Amino acid sequence: LRQALEADHLDAFLVLHLPNVFYLTGFTGSNAALLVSSRDATLFTDRRYAIQAKQEVSARLVRVRIVRGPVLEACSSVFSKAVRRIQRVGFEAARVSVRQKEALASSAGKQTRWTAWDGHIEADRAVKDSSEIAIMQDAADIACSSWEEVLPLVEPGVLETDLAAEVEYRMRRKGAAGPAFDTIIASGERSAWPHARASCKPIRKNELVVFDLGAILRGYSSDLTRTVYVGRAPAVVKQWYRAVLEAQQAARDALRPGISAAQVDAAARQVLQRAGLGSKFTHSTGHGLGLEVHEMPRLGKGEKTILMAGNAVTIEPGIYIEGQGGIRIEDDLVVTPTGAQLLTPAKRELLEIE
Ligand SMILES: [Mn+2]
Image 1 (cartoon, protein in one colour):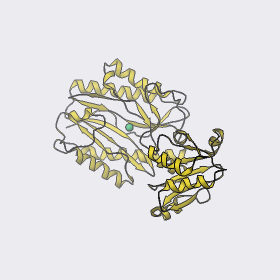
Image 2: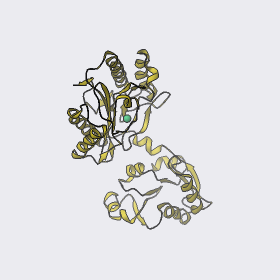
Image 3: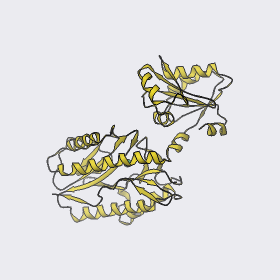
Image 4: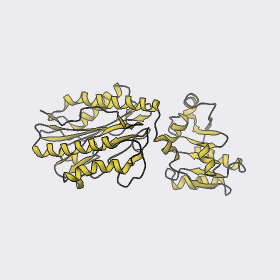
């Protein structure tokens, strides 16, 4: 990070985005500002986190300052005290509110020059090392086994929220810090909403049910989607399902270092287009996964990012047909030096639950 700052002629970098603070320091509290300069690093937080910060943050690398007022105020007081040494400061323009930026600028004073410096930590985070991948594998295992355990509970009459609760309970029992996002259980017509939260709707016979769930483990998220049919699936549903599965397989097969994110997206999209379902696939093929559920790289149309070993991504094409239902199949994978490694081996063929 310091080399990158120097290359861009910055004296310091102010980090407010908490996943970035965690990545750089290990601090998991909810209130923090981290100032990294060429010579030192200071984490500002409040008294609720005094003991926690001492345990989570290496005192050798990062000084912790417990402050009484807003962390941003304390942080900008550093600028006015170190006017010679810190003049050009990089900040996360995409993460800072207009009000925060104004407060920073006015308390730091005119001598401080602010430069939007986004995406650098996120780019580092996009490449996972083996210890991160090991945690992500465990988070993926928790999601897969929790989904499999809940399948026997799927029957007409059970509510979407019942199934969501059962999934989340099981993930917790397996050691998850919590769900990575609000568990999606979307049945019948609602399965055509790509991001439907579980509702009080009962599952009925002859419906598609989309499960989209993930666990947080030691900061890292998993993200798994499977679609089942309650009853005997009609031919048209089987045809849709086959097309989505084939699209998903094509994108998984394409995933390797050196390929662009757009090419992985195109691999899935072409299959659905050939099946006449291109217009029903209304989102991108996947996204980076890690400390956040959606992070770099995005696997979508026109994304020029070249994938490299260590990238952890989802592959999740889906189709959504208003009034009828939706189908999505999502796995988590890590790009390896020769291809990709699957983290979520949960059953992928169409399950007809009778
Ligand atoms: Mn996803």
